[in-house]
Image 1 (cartoon, rainbow, N blue to C red):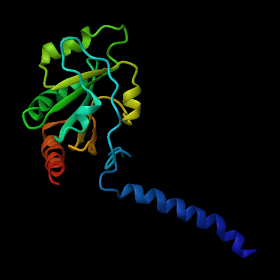
Image 2: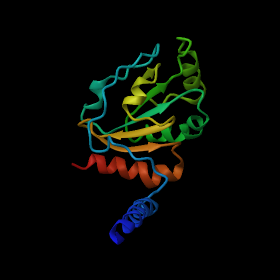
Image 3: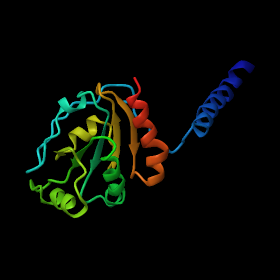
Length: 179
Protein backbone atom coordinates (compact mmCIF):
# COMPACT_ATOMS: atom_id res chain seq x y z
CA UNK A 1 0.00 0.00 0.00
CA UNK A 2 2.84 2.41 0.84
CA UNK A 3 4.40 1.90 -2.58
CA UNK A 4 1.18 3.00 -4.31
CA UNK A 5 1.30 6.25 -2.36
CA UNK A 6 4.78 6.97 -3.82
CA UNK A 7 3.64 6.68 -7.47
CA UNK A 8 2.08 10.19 -7.66
CA UNK A 9 5.19 11.64 -6.00
CA UNK A 10 7.45 9.88 -8.54
CA UNK A 11 5.32 11.14 -11.45
CA UNK A 12 5.43 14.68 -10.05
CA UNK A 13 9.23 14.52 -9.65
CA UNK A 14 9.68 13.23 -13.21
CA UNK A 15 7.51 16.01 -14.65
CA UNK A 16 9.32 18.60 -12.54
CA UNK A 17 12.66 17.36 -13.84
CA UNK A 18 11.41 17.46 -17.42
CA UNK A 19 10.21 21.06 -17.12
CA UNK A 20 13.34 22.16 -15.26
CA UNK A 21 15.54 20.75 -18.02
CA UNK A 22 13.80 23.11 -20.47
CA UNK A 23 14.79 26.08 -18.34
CA UNK A 24 18.48 25.24 -18.62
CA UNK A 25 18.72 24.89 -22.41
CA UNK A 26 21.35 26.95 -24.22
CA UNK A 27 18.72 29.40 -25.43
CA UNK A 28 15.27 28.81 -23.93
CA UNK A 29 13.65 31.34 -26.27
CA UNK A 30 14.99 29.69 -29.46
CA UNK A 31 12.41 27.86 -31.53
CA UNK A 32 13.64 24.37 -32.42
CA UNK A 33 13.71 23.08 -35.98
CA UNK A 34 13.51 19.49 -37.10
CA UNK A 35 15.21 20.43 -40.38
CA UNK A 36 18.69 21.12 -39.00
CA UNK A 37 21.00 18.55 -40.61
CA UNK A 38 18.32 17.39 -43.04
CA UNK A 39 17.61 18.19 -46.69
CA UNK A 40 15.66 21.40 -47.27
CA UNK A 41 12.07 20.81 -48.41
CA UNK A 42 11.29 21.19 -52.11
CA UNK A 43 10.19 24.53 -53.48
CA UNK A 44 7.14 24.99 -55.70
CA UNK A 45 6.74 28.74 -55.84
CA UNK A 46 4.94 31.29 -57.98
CA UNK A 47 7.31 33.49 -59.98
CA UNK A 48 7.29 37.25 -59.44
CA UNK A 49 7.19 39.20 -62.73
CA UNK A 50 10.61 40.39 -63.86
CA UNK A 51 12.49 38.50 -61.12
CA UNK A 52 14.65 35.36 -61.42
CA UNK A 53 12.67 32.35 -60.21
CA UNK A 54 13.68 30.42 -57.09
CA UNK A 55 13.62 26.67 -57.76
CA UNK A 56 14.50 23.51 -55.86
CA UNK A 57 17.56 23.02 -58.10
CA UNK A 58 19.15 26.11 -56.52
CA UNK A 59 19.10 24.40 -53.11
CA UNK A 60 21.70 21.85 -54.23
CA UNK A 61 23.86 24.03 -56.49
CA UNK A 62 27.05 23.53 -54.47
CA UNK A 63 26.96 26.98 -52.81
CA UNK A 64 26.07 27.95 -49.25
CA UNK A 65 22.98 30.12 -49.39
CA UNK A 66 20.55 32.00 -47.24
CA UNK A 67 16.79 31.48 -47.70
CA UNK A 68 14.72 34.35 -46.32
CA UNK A 69 10.94 34.19 -45.83
CA UNK A 70 9.47 37.70 -45.84
CA UNK A 71 6.31 39.69 -46.62
CA UNK A 72 5.55 43.28 -47.56
CA UNK A 73 3.05 43.56 -44.68
CA UNK A 74 5.67 42.39 -42.14
CA UNK A 75 7.15 45.27 -40.12
CA UNK A 76 10.08 43.18 -38.73
CA UNK A 77 10.93 42.28 -42.36
CA UNK A 78 11.52 45.98 -43.01
CA UNK A 79 13.71 46.19 -39.91
CA UNK A 80 15.92 43.29 -40.98
CA UNK A 81 16.16 44.31 -44.65
CA UNK A 82 19.49 46.22 -44.30
CA UNK A 83 21.08 43.08 -42.80
CA UNK A 84 19.68 40.94 -45.62
CA UNK A 85 21.22 43.37 -48.12
CA UNK A 86 24.57 43.20 -46.31
CA UNK A 87 24.43 39.39 -46.27
CA UNK A 88 23.74 39.34 -50.02
CA UNK A 89 27.28 40.66 -50.52
CA UNK A 90 28.67 37.66 -48.60
CA UNK A 91 26.48 34.76 -49.71
CA UNK A 92 23.66 34.31 -52.27
CA UNK A 93 20.36 35.28 -50.67
CA UNK A 94 17.09 33.84 -51.98
CA UNK A 95 13.71 35.23 -51.04
CA UNK A 96 10.38 33.56 -50.46
CA UNK A 97 7.58 36.10 -50.40
CA UNK A 98 5.06 34.74 -47.90
CA UNK A 99 1.29 35.16 -48.48
CA UNK A 100 1.56 38.56 -50.16
CA UNK A 101 -0.50 37.75 -53.25
CA UNK A 102 -3.86 37.17 -51.62
CA UNK A 103 -5.48 39.21 -54.37
CA UNK A 104 -3.36 37.44 -57.06
CA UNK A 105 -1.32 40.61 -57.57
CA UNK A 106 2.44 40.80 -57.02
CA UNK A 107 2.29 44.60 -56.60
CA UNK A 108 2.81 44.62 -52.81
CA UNK A 109 5.90 42.42 -52.97
CA UNK A 110 7.37 44.28 -55.93
CA UNK A 111 6.65 47.63 -54.23
CA UNK A 112 8.49 46.47 -51.10
CA UNK A 113 11.55 45.55 -53.17
CA UNK A 114 11.40 48.77 -55.18
CA UNK A 115 11.23 50.86 -52.00
CA UNK A 116 13.89 49.07 -49.93
CA UNK A 117 16.08 47.42 -52.58
CA UNK A 118 16.22 43.89 -53.92
CA UNK A 119 18.97 41.78 -52.31
CA UNK A 120 17.64 38.48 -53.70
CA UNK A 121 19.52 36.45 -56.32
CA UNK A 122 16.19 34.74 -57.08
CA UNK A 123 12.76 34.93 -55.55
CA UNK A 124 9.45 33.11 -55.46
CA UNK A 125 6.07 33.65 -53.87
CA UNK A 126 4.40 31.29 -51.42
CA UNK A 127 0.86 32.50 -52.06
CA UNK A 128 -0.97 29.89 -49.99
CA UNK A 129 1.57 29.41 -47.19
CA UNK A 130 2.02 25.71 -48.05
CA UNK A 131 5.79 26.02 -48.56
CA UNK A 132 6.06 27.85 -45.25
CA UNK A 133 4.31 24.94 -43.55
CA UNK A 134 6.64 22.43 -45.22
CA UNK A 135 9.66 24.44 -43.97
CA UNK A 136 8.22 24.58 -40.43
CA UNK A 137 7.66 28.33 -40.54
CA UNK A 138 6.34 29.97 -37.37
CA UNK A 139 5.95 33.37 -39.03
CA UNK A 140 7.91 35.96 -40.97
CA UNK A 141 10.69 36.84 -41.08
CA UNK A 142 12.51 33.53 -40.86
CA UNK A 143 15.88 32.74 -42.33
CA UNK A 144 17.56 29.45 -43.15
CA UNK A 145 21.18 28.74 -44.04
CA UNK A 146 21.42 25.87 -46.51
CA UNK A 147 24.74 24.31 -47.52
CA UNK A 148 25.73 23.42 -51.09
CA UNK A 149 24.24 19.93 -50.79
CA UNK A 150 20.85 21.33 -49.80
CA UNK A 151 21.15 20.53 -46.09
CA UNK A 152 19.65 23.02 -43.62
CA UNK A 153 22.40 24.21 -41.25
CA UNK A 154 20.61 26.97 -39.34
CA UNK A 155 17.12 28.31 -38.85
CA UNK A 156 16.64 31.74 -37.36
CA UNK A 157 13.14 32.92 -36.48
CA UNK A 158 12.65 36.66 -36.23
CA UNK A 159 14.34 39.71 -37.68
CA UNK A 160 18.09 39.55 -38.19
CA UNK A 161 19.73 42.39 -36.30
CA UNK A 162 23.36 43.45 -36.59
CA UNK A 163 24.25 41.46 -33.46
CA UNK A 164 22.36 38.36 -34.64
CA UNK A 165 24.19 38.63 -37.96
CA UNK A 166 27.59 38.78 -36.21
CA UNK A 167 26.91 36.23 -33.46
CA UNK A 168 24.83 33.61 -35.27
CA UNK A 169 24.37 34.05 -39.01
CA UNK A 170 27.96 34.70 -40.13
CA UNK A 171 29.43 31.88 -37.97
CA UNK A 172 26.78 29.50 -39.34
CA UNK A 173 27.65 30.50 -42.93
CA UNK A 174 31.33 29.80 -42.25
CA UNK A 175 30.51 26.47 -40.62
CA UNK A 176 28.35 25.51 -43.63
CA UNK A 177 31.26 26.31 -45.94
CA UNK A 178 33.56 23.97 -44.02
CA UNK A 179 33.39 20.43 -45.42
